[in-house]
Length: 250
Image (cartoon, one colour):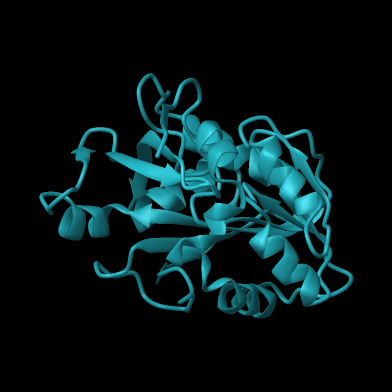
């Protein structure tokens, strides 16, 4: 089986290599539960307009469309956006970086889930304020009164369950970033050697990030993929889910 190396921005080559194979990973299997939770949480319907920032191959875009919620996908990887546009059903998607969004304040809700951009901004040479800038960009796409929902890895979970375990990567305590070496496959079974840098957060940090980005944090809950719930933050779930609102106009 062939192997090739990643060069350049680390998360875009992974997307280009995996394509729809991304949807074989277990963390993608709870999409329906997550979409139902979002529809209820955000009171979404046919009159809503949603942006999925860092949409990947479009699993949440399609799930929300299936529930009658108009949703636009956006991802750094044009290869993922093509899968969204040409899928079954095809849905709108555009290639863009969450650190520099072209969208104006036109969405009732913005979601960024499963490290869909946010949480992937650490690593060598990354500025310390990259996360705040990204959330500020996501906030800029919201109408006044609109809400942002994003997931982020839990630093508590990373330290408790991953640091020191067999095959685990290295956790940069200063930056809060986990560095792992792994391989991902494409549809033909070709392996891609990859370095992953995923940033962990605490609930307090997420609230700070939201406030610095001009949002009003409403909730932070502990969740797992496919198990979104209004759950008090704890040490034993892999992710936190932040819900924050853009202030309404005076």
